[in-house]
Length: 73
Image 1 (cartoon, rainbow, N blue to C red):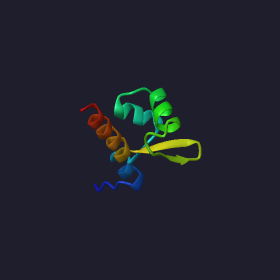
Image 2 (cartoon, rainbow, N blue to C red):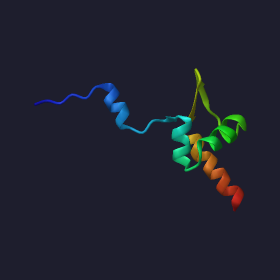
Image 3 (tube, rainbow, N blue to C red):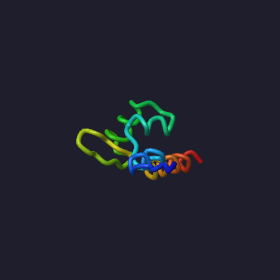
Image 4 (tube, helix red, strand yellow):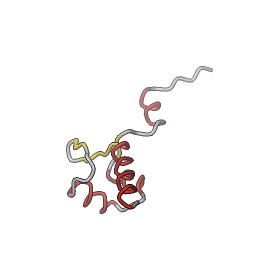
């Protein structure tokens, strides 16, 4: 029996590049409020706005973590 995966199934299996506010908060182990306050209102991390959704690139979140680590050193 041949199993065929559709395109959406393949995309869902991979880690998404853009994260929602809730996903970004979980990724960084912070609260949703912190992400909204610091990253959206405070503009500390670039984000993409699609409609009413704010999405964060994993690379930008990783760069934020690295910059905070350098400040603490």
